[in-house]
Length: 268
Length: 358
Image (cartoon, rainbow over the protein chains, first blue to last red):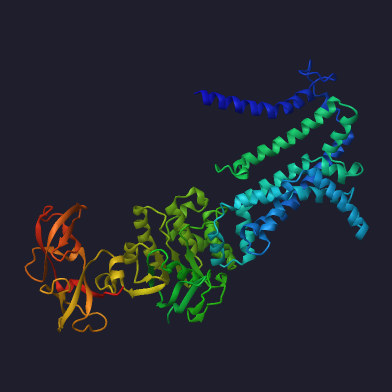
């Protein structure tokens, strides 16, 4: 009884600890100009007053996030299949290489990418710094591990006799991959892609280093730079928007595929 | 012409021999079962016919054509797996239609053949369902329909009923046999269940350590096993060490190795002639044994235990020779009690000789 109570108390504490800042942001975004908490009055005016640069930033974020999710899904699925099924030298290195960005702070990756763009310019006169492509490539690098993990987790439940059955029925190896393997693995691929999108959508350091002008400034970077100068409720509204998008994606993922599948708690 | 022929087929895994020089021929429309304990090489053999495993040696022919190096997707075999292996993202009819699609058969012909195949396994009304909405037995019937709808040269079944419970297994055995007969499709079936092998097959190949121990029709396999292994694996058997005394027209006369005064008559002559003095094992089945026989072979024994099974009572005995044996008595007959001294007997025609070295 004691333990159950303690257990519950800990769970409640963790949730409060994790969610309170978000609640604060969301509530303030409906508040007044004084940004007191709790607000003395509620309104939607700050959502209407979101300055144009933030809207542009949101568009950039969506473009970069979508492209990142797509590329990471393609590359990550291929890598995951190679890791789970391959029998070649360097397999372990490939596996480590694919999961490494999870362990390195994204600031370090951002600095490395920044360095890389300089080298690329020096050697080949190719400029990816300050371009959307550079931004997408940088985000793809940190997003791939999420897809790899999700697909590997999904692959653990994959019955290899499905492929034998397809071959037996006359399908070629490619046909089997396209008609059977990938469709069966699609839940893992999609959940990996959603996480890839969120990783990109969330990121500041890489976007800060790789971004340049207005056309390559993502929303988080815009928020980050604008609160350096002024903290106004419209920033709260923008931040709340980010929370809504993330929350909507999470709910979608949970409703369609189940989050346990991704986190591999074994209850899926 | 034979439908499937294996010619000295072998398979090694890291120098371990999984299948060792197996040769067999399956006739057109025949139902042949590979029977054996796990690790005997039966599944490996089947998978080599399907093309999932390449033989280390030997050749495989389907309809006279050498398919040893032909990839699985161009072999024209239909396979049913123990795990069903239904495509989870496709409906029942799309699962069944997959092989047709791969063969470029579409439209009304495909629809007609899918319907026909589902009718054959009595699942027409579930065509729109997904595999996860079906029971295990229904899933395996879909898998059977999917394998036969392409009208393969040979139907391959790898322990298809292995994960079903007994009652369902018996129902599906009947259904598999009916479908196989109706289509007249050449079939190779793998199982470790001897009852299944006996009841379904035209012929059974008993495998052990990668080799075929015996390949015979079920009744012959049961009544005339060629080795102690087959005698024990297919049904239950009582074995007595004996020595050949004489060789007559009706069969052999043998004496017990443990007690030379005891002689028995064996009314069968299978395989090579046995010379006097040769040691072998005399075998007879529990159900062909009677109590207090008027004539035939006799042996005295003490009753150790009696178990009741409904149709029969199974009596465990220790014979005068010291062997432990088991006999089945009709449940309606008078039963002995534990500790009783009894005389058991069996007809010369109901026993057989197998080699000792096994």
